[in-house]
Length: 157
Image (tube, rainbow, N blue to C red; front, side):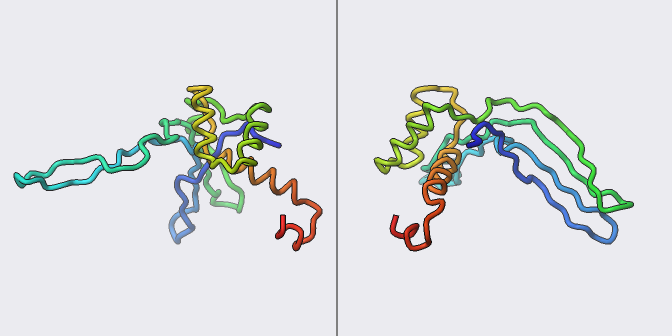
């Protein structure tokens, strides 16, 4: 099971046009910064005030610098890749065997991934694991458990 990874996402994608070659920009999922959730409210004195809205204030965005740019070559169908910045400014999202065992135990007790993540954060403050990583591990465990069963047995399990 592969659990030591950086997740790369598409930041920008352009299609071929008459005067431009297609290109794609890839970056780390933790690139960028957290945008605070605010809204403008008019108070009794007719002044606009920004108020924080309810919701999650912590995200996994940490301004990661990693960025790749791919561009299709003009002469053929091959692509050329440029590395803009190869540095990551955060720890790799990795799960150790002990955490995998904990995930299985928590999921047997029907604990949601966000609560599992909260436990990991309490154990290790600099934990780089996201709720999506936990969901992916749970999905892989389910898939391995269902392998070799018929559709009806998968449905009833």
